[in-house]
Amino acid sequence: MYLLNGEPGHYVDAADRGFQYGDGLFETIEVVEGRPLFLDRHLRRLALGCQRLLIPAPAVDLLAAEAAKLAKQAERAVLKIIVTRGSGGRGYRQPEPIQPTRLLSLHPYPDYPDIFQTDGIRARFCWHRLSINTALAGIKHLNRLEQILARAEWRDDDIQEGLMLDSEDRVVEGVMSNLFAVKAGQLYTPSLAGCGVAGIIRELVIGFARDIGVQLHEIPLDPVDVLAAEELFVTNSVIGIWPIKRLEQRVLAAGPLTRRMQDLLNQARAAEVQGCSVA
Image (cartoon, rainbow, N blue to C red):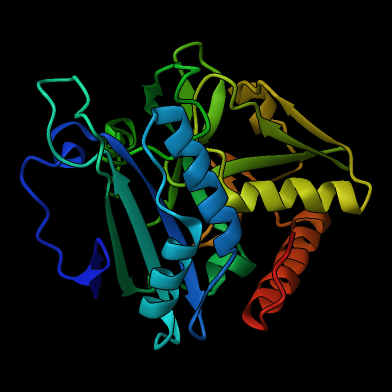
């Protein structure tokens, strides 16, 4: 199911700058029992990304209404929102005026085994590096060639995620996720000052740590730091929280802080399904 600028359809203009240049942003949202979870947070991040890219942001109420329209019949699904700068402009020059394109689409929920939540996943380090660009750091823009190249590095179905480093060999994030490490009861997550996506579940986990009094550090991490962790887990809006049970040759277990974060996220998800947004 698709809504293109509010109407059924998905045939985007070939001159659209999202197609031509990756000039836009997107959000990927879990839908449960007809509700897009943490929609307010997603729309807030989308608006921030539009501001950073100088794209006029669609009205929040409009996007929320269209999201609700698509999601209302879905028991469990994935909702994707794409906003581009629209069509026109000569070369890289922006069109005047800018008339953004918005495309909302609903997709089946991925068939992930429950064991990824309970026992964890296998991960590896990727060879492909993320470029450092502070102007784009944190936002979920459409230019994802680095992640595509990193994901192409392995075909082994036993490996579910790859961890990406930047050009200075600091661990930043997973190909499709954010990363957290636990050491001595404290929580660490890579700084996203230079690159990476500031995920919605990452934001929630940081808030959970604050609420329960767990010290959290957003700092640069190198592979040695990550491999020395007592617990590792990755997050995104579709998978929630997956423990890492093996990274390269390092074997880990889903420890108590990982489980606590999973419990808190499950409570927050349940509140969203019941219509009680988590601020």
